[in-house]
Image (cartoon, rainbow, N blue to C red; front, side):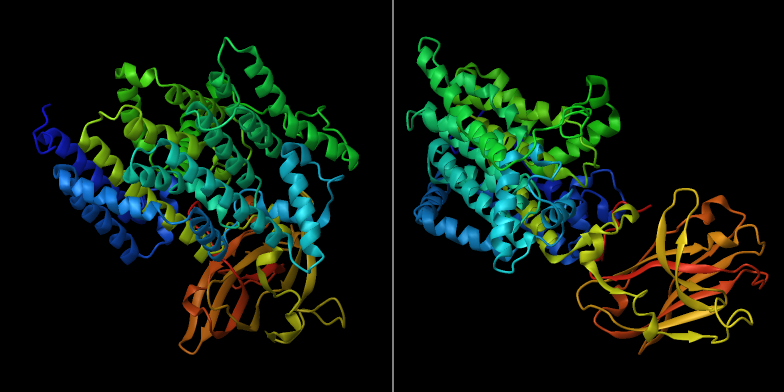
Length: 627
């Protein structure tokens, strides 16, 4: 392939460039198929909640940026002009940039909680450092979380607010480290801006937007240690802060251990003192954290059942490469590092270029990325990756930094169209990240879990069980002649004999209609119901009960959900789950109708039934993984 005097390349490179541009646009417009009911690439599933006009706008923007970038590559004057523009942006005072980003992180705080966020909030409210069984999974993070929670509680503020502040503070530290890295690695204004944009345009960046979990601080402190390490390699800083920051990252969360082997590449074999300094400084913060926890009376970790209760921390090689597990890991990696498709190109170029392989920064970043990828693909997580993606957010910056360094700074002789393609990738990654953050800010997406009902109480707007006195019941006649115990509709409890799962129910012997006057929230709402046949009536005969949910508004009555449960069907004899969106009546005053009706034969024998955990939720039902 030959290059002309204008900087243009042959048609194969343009073909590759066009393919990357169009592919990026299609991925954004279709959500990698999610808007077309193809669910293979769950990293893009959030785009199903982005309006179609916005998705098309993002796709068009990618195409237009591709056209502009192609001209930028072909014309040296255009390249110089863009470099001047980028340099102007880089002259903004660093404190102003960080202050603006901090304000943005706070204003666009997430409303969708991920992973064990609800469990963490519950622990912070109900437990202490001394009684929390998970402290040793994230020692310094736990110490800071409990300390800030108690401080904020003194001012009447919630644990959620305390953790959100820690998240934003971590984001500011991360952004400061990204700015430092961009200045260290970028040769001109355009490169520096590209490095900074790449490190911010990650799925991992949701960690800075009030993220309630254990991974914001460790990811930020890890990038801080990387920036200090590269400053040391560039002769721009001493060695001891590198060890101090790396040890702090491990203290925040032990997953940062996987970044430590790369530190050995900073050492000069002829200077033994360097190794002593690095080892000593790396141990400072872990020793300090353990000492503080000991002084506060935190019991040592109980290793009898594995580390902090985990009997298996890592997959075996055969487990890790199982197709579904590997697919989930790749999806997770693409989510946290949207530039993942460029990794193979960078690998090929790095392997083919000896000058790159001799670069000490490249060698360090390669070892760093290798350690992170080992962690990413081998660490065993109990929750599904779609829910627990943030456990691996630490990997995103390392992979992205390696790709950017190889394609922008390591050699400087990469074909122009390749670097132009990376510019399109950065545009795509930025739009992807903005939409990811936007969806989690605009929506409170939850997947109801009957086993975690107590954690979901924070989303409950109305408990219909408690408001039964406000309902209109028909028919009003009891189901038998006795004065008590024959109510057609009343409050009760059902206990399933198979597993002892007990729930409060609105008992409603068919036929019965229970009508609640309800004001539906304006932004988002759904019903979470657990209809069930009364286990006390098993073996009494009958042809089952038909459950119906309807709403009556100014536009009339609309049926939302209907199901018939039969006493001779084993699957119908347990709790059922009905999650019913109320999108059509948001912000309206409606009548919510719960009906129990006899079966097809109109036989009301043993038609004892109930609506378990009848909650109106102020949230959006996450239907992405509902069959």
